[in-house]
Length: 482
Image (cartoon, rainbow, N blue to C red):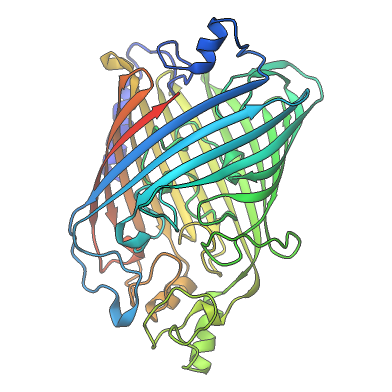
């Protein structure tokens, strides 16, 4: 925490110096390799009123974990501890964003993606502070191509001011009303529409840790890659926006197949957003609530089932389970039934000067049921700051520091202390503590649309367990976009 406070004091003091252009580098900057702008300059495209566009990106992240101390690892046959030895992890992703305007107000979006990945310890042993946001539960070292998104969007205008939407990946450039209704249906990530934050969200250019992608306690319905099928309605009224989404969860926790029973198992979310100007600088506040109905187990039900019958343990389940060899532990597979999981969070962003921005997120989830699609957190907070490199003559560089904390509920901790495991964690025992991470990075713009980023993370109490850690992780990230 002291590192974060020192950085915020530094950025506040620096705000009295000469200000530079914008807090977030403009993705359409003139010195950037941009096919759409180039085609417009040749008279072959109209970036202000597009009938189609195409963008792409490539990101490679290589991480190294140093060895760390722990009083125990995978106790009594539990199999979800982060290994204490030094490890290397990597991800490589390539994405093509394609969009076409079939008629007035409409857009069809198709996004194929490729990924190759090797996580630390099989993506086990960290709760809400997974060190690389690109990692997927079913990741493979062999490159895999899949269709991440394929959806249609229709906009209905209701007047107000005319706004120019910038051409971007998954956004056709064009004029829209400031008061409008936007309906989207198809295959997408719910984070394409909900919980946006200028300074903590575009992690291919910012932080590496998943705690800064969205609320770490937001168990949004999605398959193991983070995508789903459903509908989203967004109503914009000048500086206000109201969103509602109804989406499909996976059939089993953190797995690829979705459950196609939209009125039996589903994830609902609603978000209210207000954009404002404070002391002449833009900012926004968003409040999000979610409610999932899924075939999931409650921690207390799994414990009660085991205490009533010791044969209902982690090794005897013939349904979906995580393969624990701990015969003395309860298991969620004996407790799964239709259950409700809910949470509410607040998201705040504020530009302080033209080159410094702050962010904060906090969410409280009920903590009664298992992690189904996202991290093991039941409650989470993240905050931090980004600053452009304008002050030292590198305006397309960026430096940032973030601090995130995660908690689990008493019921969740009781289950883990009895040797139970969830989708990501389970050391066989737990000395319950707050899991936290400090993530510091410097992003260097080396040529046009190419950035290299050095990133350092310090993790305390991995898997909410004070008997293990701390863990230090170092990373290099290369990112190219066009």
